Image 1 (cartoon, rainbow, N blue to C red):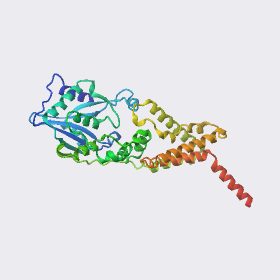
Image 2 (image 1 turned 120 degrees about the horizontal axis):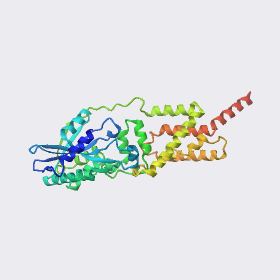
Image 3 (image 1 turned 135 degrees about the vertical axis):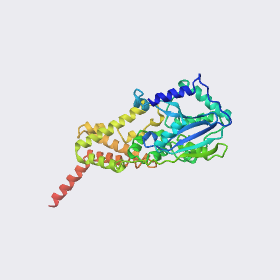
Image 4 (image 1 turned 90 degrees about the vertical axis):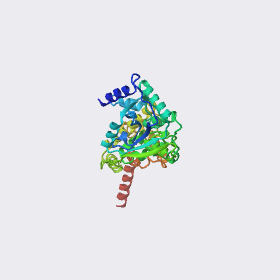
Length: 374
C-alpha cells in the first residue's frame, strides 16, 4: 500500500499538470547518507537527494532505491539482472522518521550548487518521474541508489566524486566483504555467487559512505556544510550460530557420521556447482560471470554420490577433483574469501580422502602389521 501511495505522491508532485518547484537563491540541495540497517539489503547504507526551500514551503527527498517484492518472478529477475528498481519522491519528514525509527544514522551534505543547477536537476527528475525512465535495471556496482544520484548531480553541475583511497586500493569484493563480515553465512553466500569480475580493483564510487567521503574530502566548492541529522543507535544483532565454527561443525559431522551423509554432501556441493554454472549463463550481472568457485563446488561430485565405488574412472576423477580444489585454494590465497571457505576446503578434501578408500587402506595395513608382530 505504501508503495502505491509513494507513486501517487511522486506523480502528483512532478506531474505535468502540477507546478514543478522553482529553485530560488534560498533553495538547497543536499546529499543524505544513511548508515547500515539490520537487513542484508540494507547493510551497505542508503543515499537520498534532498531539495528544500523554507520560503516556498517544499522539502522532499529523491530516492532511487525502491523495488517491488510483489514483482512476478522476483528472485529470478534479480538473479537474471533485469529486476526494475524505480525512483520515488518522499516527503523529507517521512524519510527522516523512517530511518530514525530504524535507529539508523543520517548525515547531510549541503551541496554548493547554483539555483540554475538545482533547477536543471529538478526538471530532469520531473521528466524521469513522468516517464518510463523512472524504472531502471539495477546493477550491483554501477547502477544503484548511490550511483544514480551521483550521476544526476554530475550531469547538471561540475560536482564529481573525487577518487578516494578506498577505490584505488581495494577490489569490489574486498569492499563489500567489509560490510558483510559480521554476518558469516550471508557473506559466504554472496562470495560464492561472485565471480572473477569482483576481484578487479574498484573503478567507481558505488556505496553511500564512499560517495559521502568522495564529496567530503573536497573543499567548500562541493560541500558548503555537513550536518548530523540523526546518530546511529542500531546495534547489529548477529545470532550465535552465524559463524565459521558452525559451518565447520555441520560439515565435519556430515563427513564423519556415515557413508550416506557423505553422499548427501557430495550431492549438495555438486548441485551448487551446477547452479553457479547456470547462473553464469543465465544472468546479465557481470558480477556472477566466470565464477571460478565451480572449481570448489564441482559438478563432478555428483558422480561420486551415485557411481560405483570400484569404477576405474573414479580414481581419475578423484585426482581431477583434488587438483581443482587445490587450484581454487591457490588462486584465493591472497583474497578476502579464503577464511570464509576454510570449512568447505576441509570438508571437500576429507570427502575425497574417504572416497579414495585411502584411510581404509592405511587401517588395514596397520592391522596387518600388528598381526605380523604378534
